[in-house]
Image (cartoon, rainbow, N blue to C red):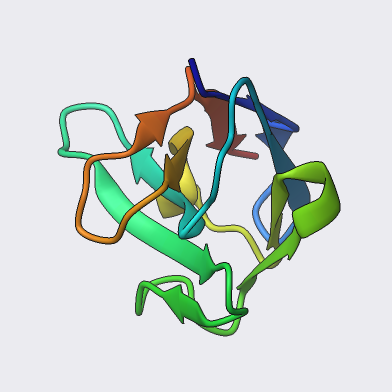
Length: 117
């Protein structure tokens, strides 16, 4: 069973930074992509960023220029560096691992990020 595990969430003031980590454990035969999604209270889960095994990145327009996704293939780990955080970034952030594109993949339990003064 593949299990992504997130860490690094917390409370930060507007304009601050946080770094999220996601380490995947279990029987991992191959990874097509790892990425981040978020869900704010009362809203649907939305895409944030993704990193493919080939090194391609993609970002939601709302986080471009502020968030950076990176990875360590040897450790099956993906990171999300979040800078210039805004209150609207407040959400539970979920890590997602896909073995094949277009599939639901495997989800972590989520980590809370709260941006507030």
